[in-house]
Image (cartoon, rainbow, N blue to C red; front, top):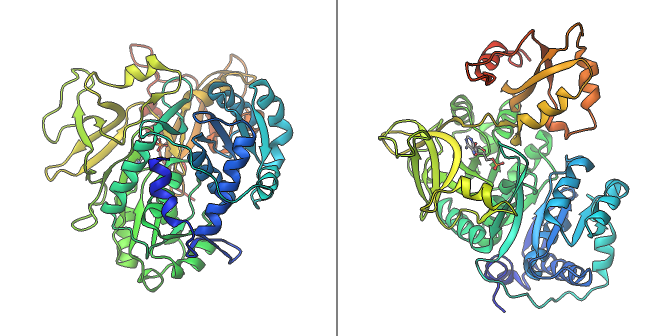
Length: 505
Ligand code: AMP
C-alpha cells in the first residue's frame, strides 16, 4: 500500500546488508537489520492500539532503536512526536496533555515521573533506554520482522515537533509526509548526497536538524551514518577519518577549531561540512577555511518550514549568509508595518511558501492563521536582507528568541519563573554572545523593595523547574529595567550593557 515517505526512505533498503549506522561501540547495523527492528516496533505500536493518525511521543536518548521508533511510526502511519531529552516532567506534561498521544516512550529513569502524566492523558507508557534496552524493545523482540506498511497520503501528518515559539506557549508544528519528503529530495540534490556518503551524525534526533535534515537525507541517498550520542570533540576527531560529510551547529565548528588535533590533514578527505540552526559567525567560517581549506556550507530553516535556503554546493559559499531559496521554495522579504515587499537589499521579515512549509499548529487554528498570509506565505519572524547577488543574510530575530548551543529558548518562560522567586520584583532574560554556545542565557532581575538578590540562591531555586539549557548562566541585579515610552522592556539596552560578560573565558 502506498506510503510515500516510507517507500522513499526505507523500503528501497529492504534486504540490504550495507551498513546503515556505525555505532560508538564499533559495531555496525545494516539497513536490513534496522528495517527488521523497525517492523518489529511497528507491530508493538499496533499492539499498543496506536492507530494511523495517532501520536507517539518519545523522550528518549539518541540510539539506533530510537531512530527505528521514528521509522516504525512512519511505517505504521502514526505521528512521531520527539521531545527534547532535557525537558523536565513538568514540561513533558504540557506536551503530552496538548498532543494526547496514544503512547509515550521514555527512558527508564523518568518512568516513575512520567507514568501519572501518561495515565492522566490516557496514554500508555513504554521505556527505551540509551543502550537500546527497555520494555519497547523487549516487546519488539517477540514480534515478526515483517510489517505490512500502512497506507498514507502525502498530506497525512508524519510528525509533530514542538517549537519553542516566541509568543505564548510551545506549539506543535504539524509536518506532513510531503513536507519531509520534498525537503529531503531538495537537499540530497542540492548537497550532492549519494550512497557513498558516510555522514558524521553528532546532532540530537529530537530536532528538525538531526532528525529530518540529517537522517532523511542519508536514508534517501542510501548512505551511512556514524551515529554518535552527542558531540564530544575527542570522539568526533577519532571518527572523522571514516566520514565523508558532517552536519553541525556552529558550536561544533568552534569546538573543533579550539582543538589543535583538528588539522587540515584530518579534514582533507571530507566532501562537505554544513552548518545551521544558529548563525555561523563569518569569523568562524573564515578560520575554518584557513585551517582546513573547506568552506562550510551554511543553510537556514526552521521547524515549521524545514530547510528554506542554502548556500550553493558549487559556486561561492558566502560567509555570514545562508544562501538562496531551495528549488520550489518561494521567499520574500516584507515590511512588517506595511505588509509590503521591501525594495531589494532592504531589511524586513522573511516569508516562505512551498511544499516544505508545515500544515499549521496543532489545535491552534487562530495562531496558525496569524502566522500565514492569505496567499499561503508563512511569516518566519526572522529579520533578513537579501544582498545584491541574491544571498540571504539573517539580521536578527523579530522576537528576541535566544538560541544557545542550537536550542531555542523563549525568554518569557524563564522570566515568569524568575519572577516567582523570593525577592524578585521583575526580570528580563536575554541572550548574550557566548564563544561556545553562540548565545548564553542571562537573567537581569530587579529586587523587591529592601531585598537583596543572591545569584547562586536564585539559580538554585529554578534548577529543577526547567531544562538546563534554558537556565541562565548568570544573573545580574539592576535597580530598574530600561523601558520605552510604550512600557516595553528594551532588551537591546540590556544586551549592550552586559555584552561581553562571556567573552573572557
Ligand atoms: P528551530 O525551529 O529550532 O529550527 O529554529 C529556527 C530558527 O533558528 C530560525 O527561525 C532562525 O532564527 C534560526 N536559524 C536557523 N538556521 C539559522 C542560520 N543558519 N543562521 C541564523 N539563524 C538560523
